[in-house]
Image (cartoon, rainbow, N blue to C red; front, side, top):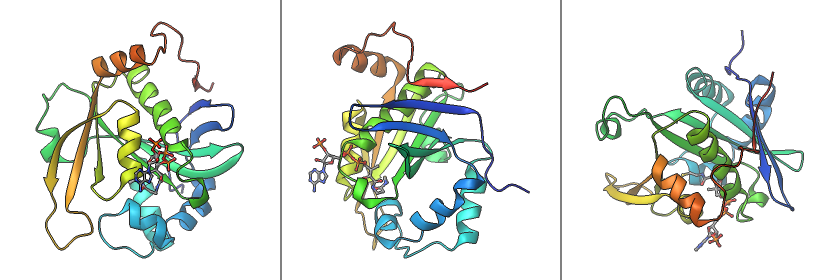
Length: 212
Ligand SMILES: CC(C)(COP(=O)(O)OP(=O)(O)OC[C@H]1O[C@@H](n2cnc3c(N)ncnc32)[C@H](O)[C@@H]1OP(=O)(O)O)[C@@H](O)C(=O)NCCC(=O)NCCS
């Protein structure tokens, strides 16, 4: 039986230097997930708790579980698999309570597992693709995302994609981070952000493709 529940959505984007494809994550990508999730330096940034490494069975649990009701993508840059990202229904009750029941609230999680690809603008680009897909194709109302205070690259990715820091939540100590940052982007704010960046709002979403 398969572990990761896949889907049929592929997103295309990037710039002159980095051709980015977000592919449906599937079991064939598990070797990458095992590698990235056993790298302490990567997990330092993705996990609030101190986790040195996740064994394969835990990786299967994490990705097998999350993919049942959410969209998981492999991030491919110039033909190379470098990370993964998720568009997930809001799973935290305290955040869910902040919005009306009828509001479609999602979160995005991201990881570049190949460390030499950090800090090159790639995270900002592929999160932009996923944000676009969320608002324009999935009709999401609000994206509510997170990073801890020590993760400046993650913080910049949210900022550069138009998210607003709406509050900082104290994290019970001792813990690596002192504050959990909550970032929000609504559909209206997304549209405004696109105008501000001269991204013609009526143009077809060229980066998006749902395969037959
Ligand atoms: C978080 C992550 C997806 C960001 O993607 P990325 O491609 O590395 O980020 P980008 O290059 O698009 O942007 C990084 C920004 O942080 C800035 N930055 C990095 N280190 C910094 C520092 N010490 N001080 C100030 N700014 C810093 C960069 O200058 C850049 O901002 P700029 O474009 O305004 O100059 C990627 O780094 C990653 O996967 N890291 C490990 C896992 C992780 O942290 N996941 C997120 C958990 S919340």
